Image (cartoon, rainbow, N blue to C red; front, side, top):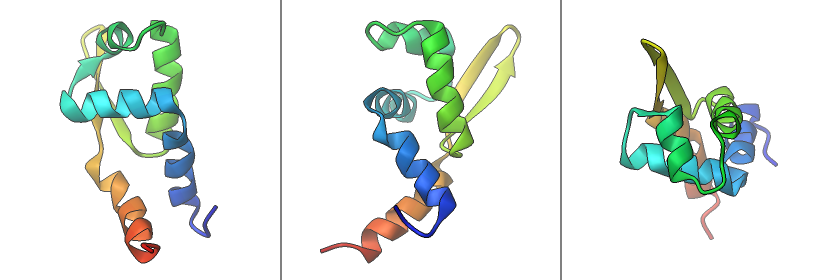
Length: 92
């Protein structure tokens, strides 16, 4: 894709439509739990959401914080900086 492994990881993470949906849900409402996310993604179990969240976390797009028995998830806005720079540099 590019010569930047971090950017490649962000692009791969956002290439999946379910992960884009989860990312978008968290951008609109920060701090959703895994259960809340699974109820907002049709046909998705908590385990499925957890797997997608792991990919988003590995790409640096999402942070997860424990709160008792729950985990709250938040978008990491700085993670999009590399993608924005690449898009700006490659604007046609």
